[in-house]
Length: 199
Image (cartoon, rainbow, N blue to C red; front, side, top):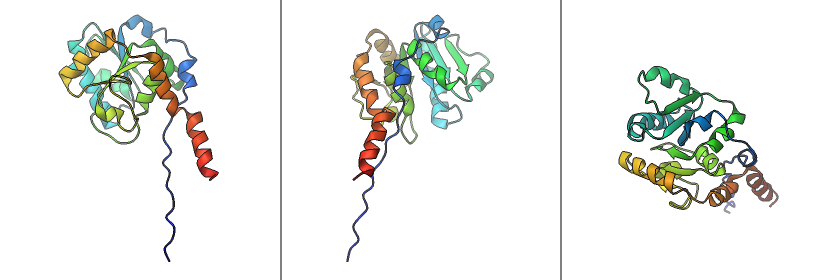
């Protein structure tokens, strides 16, 4: 006799959407308009490479745009770069309750992630904040995002520079971005899990 195969369900990661909908813009960030944001754990190699890509390849070509970078461990950037571009603002480690405020104050998000694994939660957070995103296919993997509807796609240096300029003048529909983010709201994720466990 054959044993019945056990069903396997994959529970998706999520974020608390309300944190982004019901928050004010960070006052400090307002000084750096227009601005693009990237955040993440600096010691995680894909984030590290992405930040260096922004600092070395993108920021010098877009001097009119400020790049806001923050995340645990990012303080060391100021030591690693003696001549950090003037339009790069490194906030370092920030409190969890400040993240949504910072994102709400920014104009766009830039996510040059070229490899890695797992769900890219920062993408969902940017969507929840209503930010137009310029990102690689790797950054958007597994999220069901549609290019030119949920984000602008870029792969290489020049494409990032051009798409960022385009994104600043052609923001994506904020309501559509937030709507997509709600698919990953913890409340929805947990409700689905409860239904699965009750079967």
